[in-house]
Image (cartoon, rainbow, N blue to C red; front, side, top):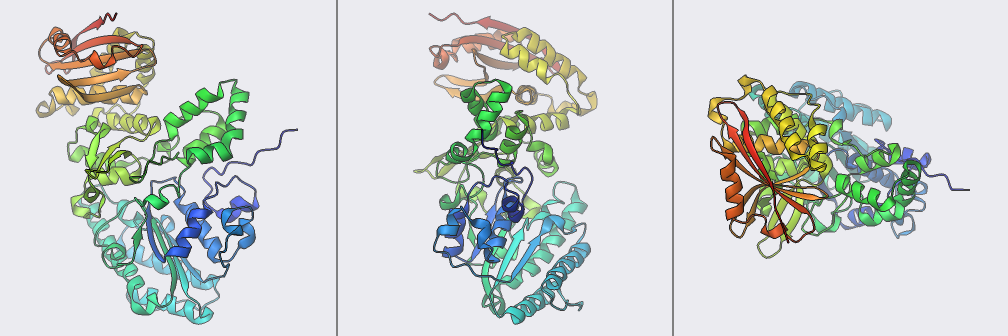
Length: 531
């Protein structure tokens, strides 16, 4: 009889619940053991749904001395000395941040709730947030006469919730930041430092002028730390060790090939890399959901729309195809101001871009989308914002026609999509070749077909390359010219040379856009004859 598989912990971030109810737990306690044995002050940035809250919950149970919950895990048999510590744990997902007044009140309520749980008299004064927090710490320390553990989840929620929503919301974000600066500043005070056992703070972003970064000099940022690059997410080895039975169940019930399924899972959900060390991880939420429901879909993106990112991208007039191959040095990932946000570190820390490669000699990172799930979903939302077409049911027609080699039919579908874009969204000052190129790129990417823009060759730059299982489509764009000139350029500069001997059909496509019609006006398609 087959052994019953443990349930997958989809959306469950409570370590105690996972262990007591026998959900699957991917053992991350070796890395956690190194953390708590080697330092005191840590910050970790990771995208949402990557297990930050579960990591905080795991730390909570370790410092509560709940050794039996860890039976069978690395830390259980290690030399860690299990001891119970008082803990101040705050989750800013559950703290109101509508304005600084509500944020102030809710932090106080959350801290008093902790005191109540510890059977300690609440703090009732109306002093500053620093004095209030300090008093909470003193009362807990005086009861237990032991160092305190501080666990803070999503520290930046009161800031990031107001970004990309206009000037008034930006003012609220800045005021919330000022309050948080005062609040976190308590952790650096000498009287508190002597009462501290461990500090662990998570979030998505690193904002400057928040005291945990500007004044906690001993804070270790784990975000791009090679040693802890896989402390969240699921590695290929962990996939093989813990999830093979779930893959086999998926294959058996759906009657599909397991190697093909693994490759598809890898393409959709793997690819996140957080340091110069070449270790890539799967998004756990999406992977678990796909294995539970036996369907490969875009799960992660549907759990939250990155409105602030899309608004910033539109505001800064960013050319979207550039996200395929951005380069950045370490400085680009440092802290930054609320009033002067750069989309690159936000995209990286939020999970929409990841490290593709690292040049050790130049100390340069190459960034791109981590996988198909992110690229397809993000570009679909971007196209909806730029086009006003919130629900486009024609993406599937584009994808199927391209995959079947029916490129003429695919282009005709795209023409019909362009024709539906409201005239008011196509300002005269933005209608040019780059605009059409970007919109073309967004439609193809949103359909789920692989497209790369501006590929350098020995003799020039390919505008776009679409690769399917059987074909390469080499595309050149023109604006208010003639598609035959585009085909001619592809031939003269031999853009097809790098792809001639890869065993796939090569199709040359010239596309001309009309600024007057605001659409594709003509196109030419030629199949390349290769010997």
